[in-house]
Length: 446
Ligand code: UDX
Image (cartoon, rainbow, N blue to C red; front, side, top):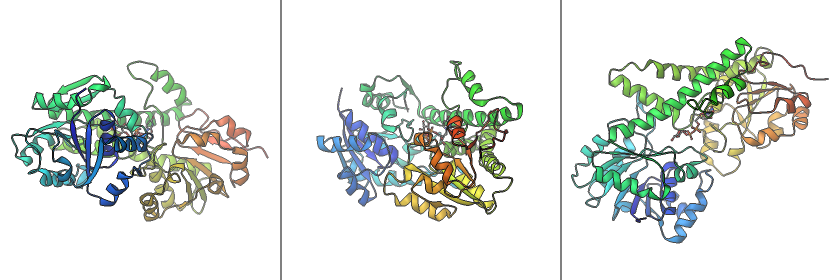
């Protein structure tokens, strides 16, 4: 496979994964990042993102001389054949994607990009951004390509190296082919298209996943009312090949750094195009109700009101396997319980694993709960425990010890994650989402 000289701008979650994985495929990668302290750390392979395999790949790339980190975008692009833009596109005013970081990088690199190089947008950007990028760049000798990423946090390296598909879009066929050649070693099916369609694929996929989850969460609520069991229903549905078993687990709502941002952005894009995307509006509205729904279940479990009641929260990150609190549904539920007067204590395995001032600052700023670093401390004197993130270790807890610490022996399982029988053996009542027994009150043995 041909080895390319690649620049990656941005050493965040997507940029760092892209840089380390491309280096592991044999390309020579320079990663440009504005944060000088981060560059220093990365040069020592000190990775602060909780992502399996990433620290090892960064260390290997550095040792092999195929990966380097520099301060700034222009410095990284000096002799690049392909330049990846991996800077944040957060939710801006009114739900549109905020392209400030993309524009700042374009301004910085415009006069430095080598002639004939290809500029690739990996960040999720509104349909039409590739065209706008080309106009902003104003360089006929640099082609612009859209190559969206489909990396899940917590399995980003695996997703990068074992993709379901690669999507590459550009007006220039030669540029698109150069970008797909970077991934030649992966043997993945490749969709070559125009830039607008490639940009659309990313939104279309993420909004579809959000739709699946809103559908399942709504279905869970209906199951409860009808005495059906969502676990059996989703198993029966998921075995249909046209539907598939993934993204069918009910929860406290979808969140994280992508789904909320992308659903809102596509809504705005549709509005701007004069299209009433009613189905997507309902998907978002259903998710907005989900935190209240879980909070209602907690209130019911503790006798009607959470005001002045101590509640222990198991899991705060937006999903298991990350230390990311951005748009975490767990924090949305915590916010609702706090607003209703609950006294909240929280525990999350992902927030112990690393020294992460950002997460602790975010929690302190929210000021809605006290973070503890032991499961028994979160259970101590609590009227109920609430599972909000599906950390595997929660399944194996010593429920007898947890029961001894609890004031009220009930667990509201906002992820349908625990084994109700294991809890019952310890005298703890289990209440999940969408189960035929969800409304049944289990009395703890004396
Ligand atoms: C997502 C997309 O999957 C990925 O392709 C895209 O590039 C970025 O956004 P990520 O945000 O890491 O990845 O999370 P993902 O694993 O997709 O989960 C999204 C949300 O759905 C989380 O809040 C998760 O807890 C929730 N979820 C997922 C459920 O509630 N139930 C499920 O069955 C699956």
